[in-house]
Image 1 (spheres, rainbow, N blue to C red):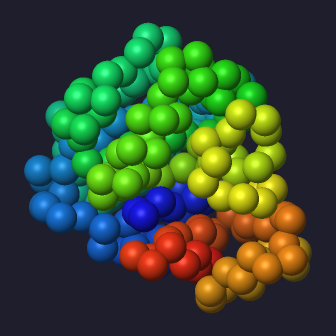
Image 2 (tube, helix red, strand yellow; image 1 turned 180 degrees about the vertical axis):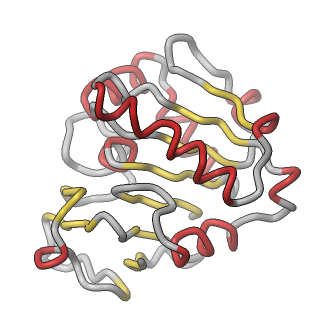
Length: 186
């Protein structure tokens, strides 16, 4: 599974390199669905240019980025014309409501199963976790984002035995390997 759950996107060189390692083609050829739907608050709206810049720093041209606001359905066929889904932060409740309204979560799970890359940022990560009812059901525990360094989860393989909650720092990401194991990187 090529899923990256973050607090702040491709914040570090390590997270950026992991993201790029998932690519099967050149960044110049990579097509992205950019989802700003959760950005309903001024602070979240201010971060949207930084999220777009994350993609630009990876070499993805603006012309390859399609903005999808989840106000209308996107067919599975249209989604599968892309290589990456980048889901921005803001209100996880609003974002999940829009995802469920258009049954986009099922399409995202199929997209991941077929080798698509998904990056969640803050609320875009929380919708994959157990924080909210009717979530996308990929990460089985609660996920706290934007945690301070002194209470963040340790880097390395993420052992979920006995964990009901994971605290993720601003410069950390949860990533998956081909065997479904989870790792925390920065």
